[in-house]
Length: 140
Image (cartoon, rainbow, N blue to C red; front, side, top):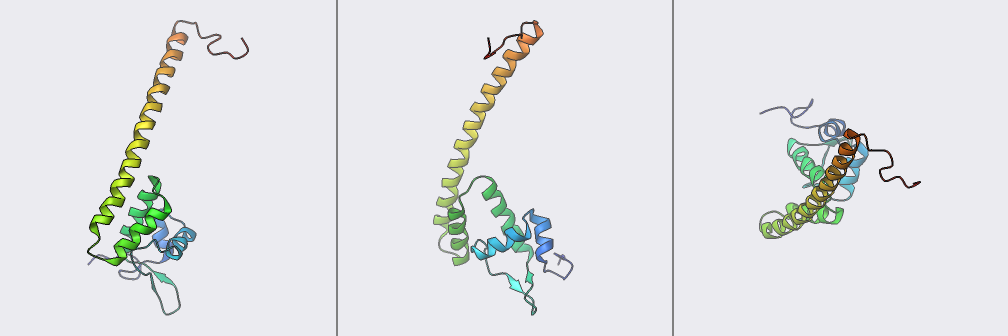
């Protein structure tokens, strides 16, 4: 069995922050908002202890949030996961809906990139011909 942290299989909040890119404050927020797949363990002194599975789940959450998943949807997804087997169709529906939003965002960004590439080409052509003076000059 591989060691997840300095204390056997358990990681401190600082170690989890380093592995996930989330701040300690964000990790506490995720716990408070019930965004974790399960409860966070505590030492007898009250310090949080995370498992490798907790880190894996948090990395999924980080990607879902980075892709624009609303917090309410992430909460619902976490709730479904905590409920256990039997709601996989609901989980899939939630993920499919989010994927469709991400696909639409990607398409919109590709259209923006295409326009930017075209406009950059216009400027490059004019500069190469020495005819760039006055291009889109609002003062002219």
